[in-house]
Image 1 (tube, helix red, strand yellow):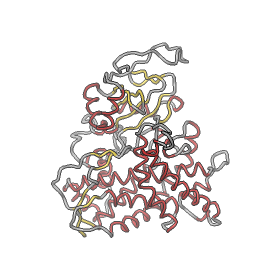
Image 2: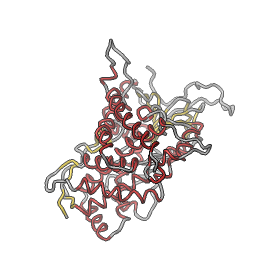
Image 3: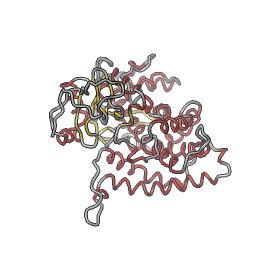
Image 4: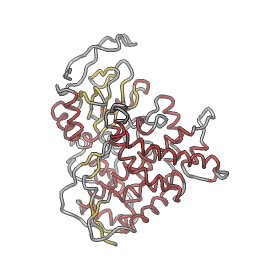
Length: 455
């Protein structure tokens, strides 16, 4: 097995269109077999990334199962170069969430198809539409929080997951009725299986009469996805039959009525896959960030007191800064990347050949003291009266920056405001919760445990 070291390698594409014959030049990397590197990433990805940066600097070449040969960068200037490179030179990281969310979701689309779909789906997740959803967020938050038990520690993650799931279901379908019970039941285990499936190698299709894949996370995901698809298909069909569709303001109604620039409409398959992305990917990351926020606040009483005072006074600035600081200090997604499709990609001093994945280590950027003074300190004031620096990338960047970023930010803001107006979070001296990998996302190991009292 070839090792990855600081060297030039032959170009797989021959002479490139510019006539530049320089061979690819890769950053240095660990001289270890792919299998060993994969084990390290699978068991302790965050720690491995920290050690690689300490040894090799802000760019390192690795060889991993699933993702193959890849370059991991942790410099904001290199990240900006990557995210602003011509779209025809790059595709989404391979593999990506499209392998589980569907071939017609934006995660899987490229080029013109991706641009036109993003343009079509941007309006309901931005601007005045966002303000219209705030009442739904507060209502669902109060509904869940009314069931909380006071004076006893509990994991906040399940509650945050129920809140964000009910919010996204209501905003997507405009209802909270019995017909959506199936979705509420199947989406949480589907998310768990799908998150694991994304980072799990493909298994052989069959051994004897039994599909081996059916025993792993991909098989579990497929079973939940079949139930989910049947429910979504029925809801789409019902929407198409709705004589009052033009009076609805939910996201499904918008999708059913929207048209591309050429006048064509979204197909049922396109709508189904985009709804999957919204429902599955759109609620888990927000719920996890909220659980981290409660874990952080319970261990930072001065920040908590400032937040409560601001809520009582009707302010917003410190709460917004706190959300940014939670996302910096506890990024749920630690990697965002692209796949090189051009003969090569020039990135800083490096020339990366076709077929390589280039991944931005978000967690390393957020922990870098060059960009964030005293990064181990939880300090929302670093984001007061200022724009987050280029090293702050919880939503990724470029043309594939999370389309739901504005919605998620609004959601976290309203949930925290409502929670702090209803309950007092009891400070704790317990150690910080460890990072727990759920596959794609990192969650607090004990579920963001808190103790509350009614205000």
